Image (cartoon, rainbow, N blue to C red):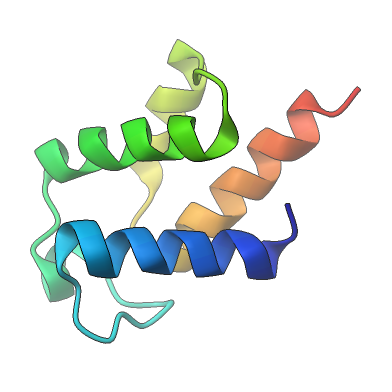
Length: 85
């Protein structure tokens, strides 16, 4: 998936499932939107469904560094690049 498609899908998830209102790509998810660790786990599950595969333990641990929507998009691009063989 291209970054634009990933962005569209992630924004849809954040607005519909997490009730974000006008999320900015550089908003701090925790500070601006009250995103917590439970939300992060739920989002990872939705990302697995979106990608059609399970994330490895290492990929899930790397997700803990995410702070913004742009971080999510960078993270997803790296996962996709690592799985293309």
